[in-house]
Image 1 (cartoon, rainbow, N blue to C red):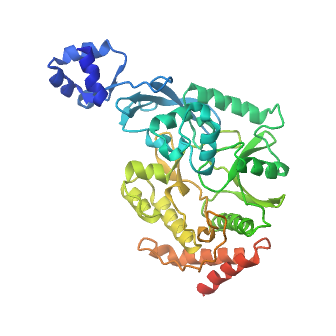
Image 2: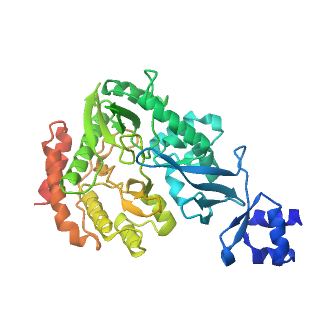
Image 3: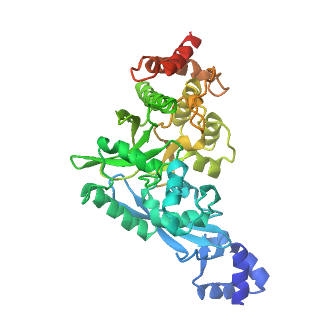
Length: 438
């Protein structure tokens, strides 16, 4: 009987009715069998009850505690993650005591996986985990293997597994009480050296997503710690480096413009040192006492709730209809999307818009980040190609905000054109946009 029961559950989780019918046994007999097998878990209650067989992953077991770090840096148990056959996961929520069956890793853990430029760095550095160096080839079990070892530095307030909790506590100590001169704390004088390390693929200090080379640092002032992401240009002596310098300054000005008109955006600062331009961005998913804020990308939210991958305005409308976001957040997304179109941001993908995630999994819009004129980036080979300006048109959802946001964009392009560190070539681009809106 036991091998047959295991064989059935290895195919997929099943209800008591399905199991009793296939095994030709009574409900009391099934209950007795299940109680004798700790590898079988019960999901749900009453008629919604299902049974699943735990699935060991490599040498890491089959279930792990998941912790939550709050804004005061306190750690509490968020829930239990259990791998089940054939390839799913069960989430037991500590707050509601409910279990939810997912076909893959739960959506709210999606963003903890390594992504983008620094994600590739991590996959190269941690080869001892035996993972495929190509992130796009990773399966859920590969991601979980990574999270259990190195998830504590990822952009999330969740810590998957006990080792991640211990590593986070060690990180707190290293930042606030450093005992070496090559730790997480860096000064601006060391930015050039850090940039060279990243380019040489020697080290990666953070794993935030995105293709632009970057590293992470902590700044500690009066017992307050600020975590920064630092993007950097190639040496500005080259056309490629100068263009990236212009774009980083343009990103800084875009964030400032949005703040000026009342839209929450990441705080940033430009630093020029050792022949490069650096853009410091304060991480808004971190707090000054090394606490964290829950955050999920539109990518994770859309995959779970929407099921389509249209532009930001269309996805926002779907989320509003589902009552996943507020009317205020919906209107804000429309304005941010319109602003991005008007400043030639052709890279508004789902990883570049995020939401704060509350303990009850409700969503609220996070500050804007990665907002810049991506139309004018150099090619992947580092060549600066001359591109015509592209006049954006309102979509049917952004028509009501288009006139207002057009004024923001005009103000933005004026800031770019007047900035003393913007090159003559890029200033001409800004002036063309200003002229086009007259």
